[in-house]
Amino acid sequence: MHIVLVTNELATEKNASGGLASFTANMARIFAEKGHRVSVILFTTKEVFLEFDSDIELENVFVRKEVWDWTDKLTRIICFGKKKLYDELRRAILDLEKSYYISRAISKLNKKNKVDIVHYCNLQAPSLLALKNIPYVVRMSSLTRTCMKAHERYYSIEQKEYPATLRMRMEETAMKRARYVISPSLLCAELTQRLIGIKPDILESPFVLERRKWNDTVYNQKLKDKMYILHYGSLSYFKGTHIVAETIWRLLKEYSDIYLVMAGSSEEIYDENSGMEWKAFELVKQRAGEYGDRVLYLGQLVREKLYPIIENAQICWLPYRLDNLSNACIEAMAMGKIVIGTERSSFEQLIEDRISGFLCERESPESNFSALKEALQMTEQEKQKMGEEAKKQIERLHPEEIYKNYLEYYEKVIREW
Figure 1 (cartoon, rainbow, N blue to C red):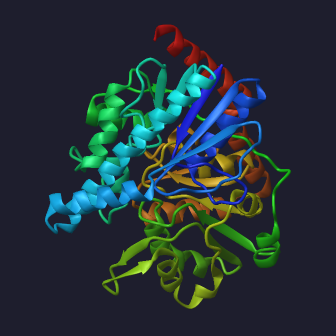
Figure 2 (cartoon, one colour):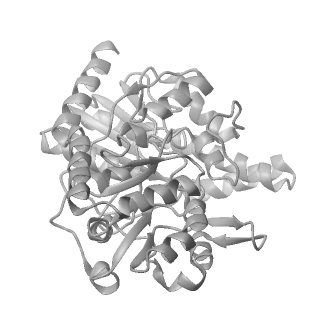
């Protein structure tokens, strides 16, 4: 089978990456190892140079500078100086152009070696101009309008209306046009059905814990011999870093031997006390007060350097507002770590509360502090038991199981096309 994976992110050894990037890399390798022909189309706004596995064909589709300049001029004329409208329309046109280039690249691949199925991500609507003569599926990394709302200061998952921009509408139109849409997360599938009337098929994502290339340099330099709680991901409202900030002083005051370690890109968060916006890690450190020297920020790390830090953490603290089957949670549970997550955020699909981890109330510093105390007071035997339960939960994401599920699904799509 010749499979083409279309993505705007790809995890490599040299660049830090999120869930979609890791998923694409894992899927490409799993199917290639099983003897399938795998091509990856990485679509970007500008040309990038990534090194990936030699047995997997990688093509970078990007917007050429002359096209970008032409789009810029056209959009400025249409918008008459309205900056917000200009930014949105310009990006929407670029997305449309990328979709065109992607379809053209797939057509060339198909002429060279018949393409059996194309697997698109949903972000930036790459399938909007998908070729109808080649079977394809669209996998949701997230429903963008709910995710964008979760990045804002005030958020409720239960709200009925989520404002959608032109680009979001394009993503949703592309999904509506697709006959086959996949979601790893039950919660994201539920939100998609409620907001845009599509019921995605549930296919969880593979997880590969590859230890051979781990790099423990950062751990040895900064964390060896320290007891610490780890909060990682993009540090933001979306990932619940504001809850960490509201809880940190009490935590470090009560547990004088514990450090808080943060890793990931840092967004801005509004501070109620000062009335100012701070970088997320700076706000947490400032809120720790006299214990600020026990808050350590490591920046954004590639997975090979991050994994030893996860493995040696006492607790992985992930009070996320929303996620699409969190890769951070899966990584930690696969290593037998205690994860403190949030209910109704997709974590409940992975964690059974107080058996394989902890689930807290969303937006509740009190609920998080209570779970942290309970976890820190567990005996070594209790921690080990919870860690074993966590590992069991992740066994269903073993590459062999996920490969079978996806192969059956791809074959069904091809058969029904």
